[in-house]
Length: 158
Length: 126
Image (cartoon, rainbow over all chains, first blue to last red; front, side, top):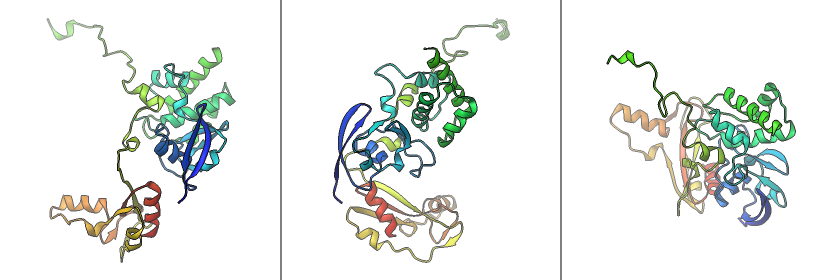
């Protein structure tokens, strides 16, 4: 199969890559660009572990064809911390132990950040609904919801 | 001194909330899990699973998958030795079904190929 050249922006950096027409954005991120922060849980859009932002919209990168990102702005978990400084969500997830094995964590952080940009003051129910597409098999969702609320409060007062 | 004479002591770790040592790697996506590791010359594996909860395997034709360019190996239960020990025989059957699949999702065949997409294509040819 022929490879296609794609130009896109990932975490603010313009990026070029070659990919096959049937490759997903997730495969390109992980296998071609070495950005393994986004995880493949199911590959069918059920688990949310591969969540990234594309043109300001939260998407499952396993369901996006890499060629669709031509000219798009993609944001992944790797772009969330600014250098050494963690995003408030990342810091609070650590402080409140809202992760265990950490495979769902990158997806949940990207999704939660998208929620707080849209709605800085969500109710618990809104957080639960927003994160309904992100499956976690170890921590249980309580600590995750609490951590998102703590971070939201912190970001509102900042 | 009796053990219960000492009622309170400040420990460095016990009784405190410590942040997990692998935490920063995990929240920044830097943590390397098994699936995140790649090595030079690495092959990609893929497994064909049973769509049936309980069924006899009449025949598996792997010839088309084996003939696909980039496919390095295709294995089925028939390629595995049958251990004499009951325990290991059960383990072997759990790895790859032999004559009968025992659950929906039971592994039936496995492919190793040069890339993920070739492995995926080969699975469709079995």
